Amino acid sequence: MRLSKRRRPGVPLLNMTPMIDVVFLLLIFFMTVSQVSQINRERLQLPKEKGDVEQQASVITLNVTADGRAIVSGREVSVARVLRIVVDQLDRLGNDPSRLTLVIRADERSDSTTVNQLVAGMAELQLQRVRIAVEAADG
Image 1 (spheres, rainbow, N blue to C red):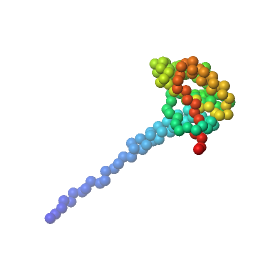
Image 2: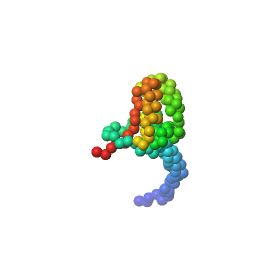
Image 3: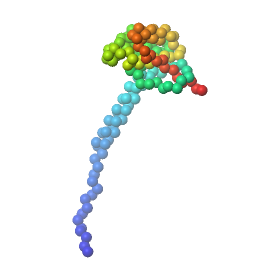
Image 4: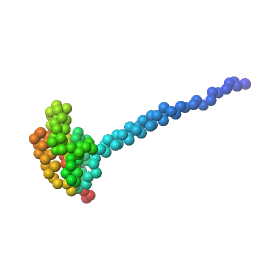
């Protein structure tokens, strides 16, 4: 019995260029997302309190530094500007204060004046979900 002597086609070449392009695009995407999520997390020394609930996703995260400066999305803003940001966000949510959460991350070394002004302003806007972030204490 004689077998066919046809040549078998060689191993097909795999073009790696599109795969490399996709990998680089994913790398750039995740680097960008990582940087944006870090903007909302200023380096603050939070007060330590006992608790078991991690910070939930919120619409607005406000950082108050040790010297009393308010920072939203990496930019220093005044208390009046924070209130304006909240009002704008409430307008986008149909003026329903129950749909908006504000997380205040205040440095434990800071004066409470800024935090008190912010909480008073949120009370005037009838914002019910104002959270003050703390670091979970050991124990």
